Amino acid sequence: MNHQDREELKRMLEWFLNESLERILLSHPVDRGAMSKSRLRPLLIKGALAFQAEEQKGKQAFHRNMSREEAVAYVMALLDGSFKQGEIVSSLGRAVILVSKKGKITMKIKRNPADKGILTGSGSDKAHGTRSGQISSQARIQSGSPLLEHNRKKRYILEEGRAVPFLVDLGVMTQEGKIVNSRYDKYRQINRFLEFIEDILPNLNQERETTIIDFGCGKSYLTFAIYYYLKVLKEYPVRIIGLDLKQDVIDQCNSISRRYGYDTLRFYHGDIASYEGVEQVDMVVTLHACDTATDFALAKAVGWGARVILSVPCCQHELNGQIENQLLKPVLQYGLIKERLAALCTDGIRAQMLEAAGYRTQILEFIDMEHTPKNILIRAIRQGKKKDNKAAIRELTEFLGVHPTIVKLLGAELEG
Image 1: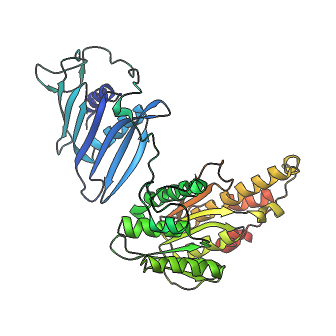
Image 2 (image 1 turned 180 degrees about the vertical axis):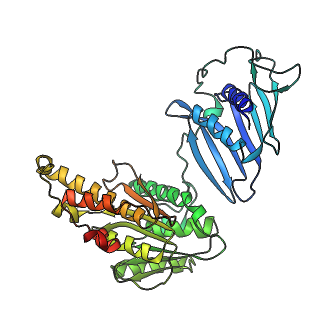
Image 3 (image 1 turned 90 degrees about the horizontal axis):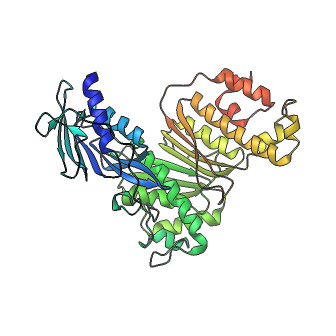
């Protein structure tokens, strides 16, 4: 795409991207093995105009929300090498964008009669985005517009009103699919976690069995949710293992699993550090494993070469008992401050150690603080390339005066 085509396409998109837009559909992919299409629509988020892209990749759809400027850049980038055709439908008019093999852009625009010709062509509907006047700034948002409705009722992966058997057994839903009021926070937590699972689907192989281990599964709300979402809804071939130290909980979970015919979901009694039941694991989940149990789970995941790690740490006591720094001493005298600082540093060091082991790592908010203070999720995707950050980690741990278990497990040389 040459500079002139780029500028003319940008002007046209800026004109169409407002609350009058119905949709932009990008299709005819250059690489059929990548994204097959992308559809944009306007929506309201907290009263402000935004645009949502729905990207189709295989059988999965992924969503992302953008500002107007980001949406313009997004469409231009995809038409510059990823897609050969774009269609725009708006109350202002319609447009078709065609991209030749050599990258030449052709835009055919048909304006509605009510529009006063902000974009003009050369006597026909074919145009290259020439202006006959200034394009006005974003028009006033009409909150009643059906185009801007964005699930005023929150969209959940496991929808209310449709009974999910294991949620009924676990007391979260009634037989009619109604959420039990006292368990609504648990219902939100389960769906929020499934959104993280949805995000990592491209990293799972749908052609072979995926092995997933949930360390410290407890009553297994989320373990059952992962199985139901991947195996029942998405039809991925998965084998899921739940591990916990409470035998009565393990027995109950196995009973529920057998009752619903979940033949590749099994629960076992055991601890994280000594578990040797499998040789290859694709995804490791560890939710609220207490203190250094999280570190042992992360080390196990790295040892297996797991492609995906999802961890919600809990009770980070270790660094709270170690942290000592003269510069920070005035604030460390306050117990609450010391506890929170130690917890944040613990998870930050864990994330950095995973980066050093070859994982692309993010620290994400799991659920709102109003529901639980344990709201950090560590998401790590194996990419192979190890980050050269060992000197920085060593310097940080020396500054804090700490000796984290995760460093001992994954980087003994850092202790030298």
